[in-house]
Image 1 (cartoon, rainbow, N blue to C red):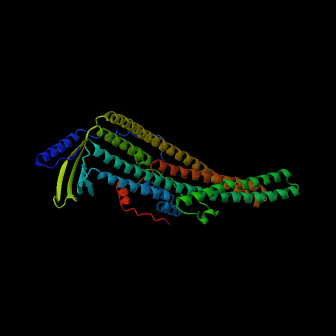
Image 2: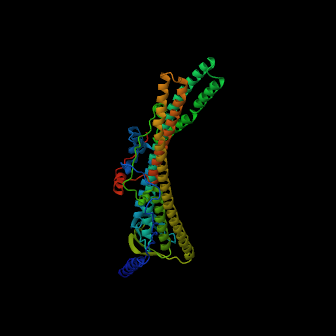
Image 3: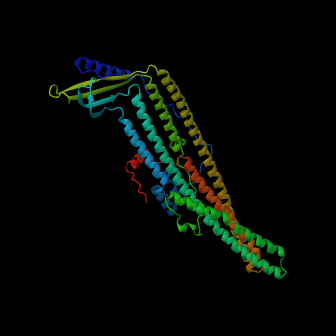
Amino acid sequence: MPFLPLSPHRLRLGLLAAALAVLAGCTAPAPRAPEAPALPGAWTSPQPQGIATPELRAWWTYFHDPALDALVGEALERNLDLAIANRRLREARLQAGRAAVQFRPSFSAGARTLQDIAATDTYFHASIDMVWELGLFGAADGVREAAEAGVDASAADRQGTRVAVVADVVRNYIDLQAARRQLRLIDQLVQIDDRALQLAEVRRRTSTGNAEETAQARVRRAQALAARAVPEEARARAAQALSVLLGRMAPDPAWDATGPGEPPALAPFAFASLPADLLRTRPDVQAAEADMRKAAADLGLARSELFPRISIMGSLLYSYNLTRNRRTTSDNAPAIGPAIDIPLFDWGRRRMQVDARQEALEGAVLAYERAVRGAVAEAEGALAALAAQQGRADALAQAQPALAERVRAGRIQARLGLSSEYDTLTAQRAALQGEAEWSTAQDARSLAFVALYKAMGGAPLPPAETAAAARSEPSRETP
């Protein structure tokens, strides 16, 4: 609608229309997202049994490995995926701040020259204009809630990236140590097979053995050497993955060394409490909840478009006649009044948009329920896997003393002349293979421990500490 010249009567009419519009806006509340599905009251899978309780917010420190702690700290500081997620979160916060001022009065100024319709006079116009979109019928609430949901979705994405980065660092570190340990055990097997081949040759020459023993010794040695390919590849892959996670251009040369490679010390542990509600802190569940809230806000915005769009507009115009400035100098004309956009001919299209947004909200609710059910299933699976790997590691640990005793007894018999050195090599080989199986079971238990905390959302920081960290978060400098 065109501006009305400012007069007391018309000013009262404009203010009355604005007041009525504000009152009418109270009758169109924004829709709310449905309640979240209920979580199970207890776990069906067995929970770990032990004395100590791991720290939820820094679960990787329970491995008691300073090198691992340093790698995780470096990854949290230098990882590129996490840096990208931080930037996106800041962008979402800035966009939310921009949306918060959308329904505040905005002012603009302009100047231009105009000619009248007869093209006889030229005017210089200078104006100060004001537009105040009131955001009635739930429009302002919808925009604000959609922006807040966007921030929460970005925060969930950042937390998901953090959980994935920490879990990947720990997993690749465990794989690296496991590969180094397997290479050490294979080298010891090769030494045993070399000695067995030498003794088999001696037995064949002295007619105490046969050619079949020599052939079998050569085959075992060749198989042991061929077995190095798997851990060597695993070590290379883990080292490269760690370098990417840490933001490095190349792996640390020390990672390629075939050292002791002791497994991370993961002692028996238990949880003081493991509530199922902890699953709501999972990044994917939080992201699904944010999507559901955004869908509800979009539905509110679509419904608000069914009602008239009311704005308060004002202008202070200064006009100067450049052609007849001797006869007529200048004038100013203030004006204020409401601008009303009424949906008439496109109301059907807007109604269809409301129906579409309603379907989107229903889909978002189902997606949230799916995310919660998937989180429960993943957590139950992680608990079951951890219990199974714990049982496997315990069973193999019980076999280690018996294997070591066989080696010790064979060496004693060899010293007493009751058997030969060749006979003791079989027990030594079996002991090394048992140690390799036991260390593999320990690694699998550690990986199950990682998977459990990842299933629980990586145990994010409490809300107060998360907000403090976001406020004090330093900017990342590219090395």
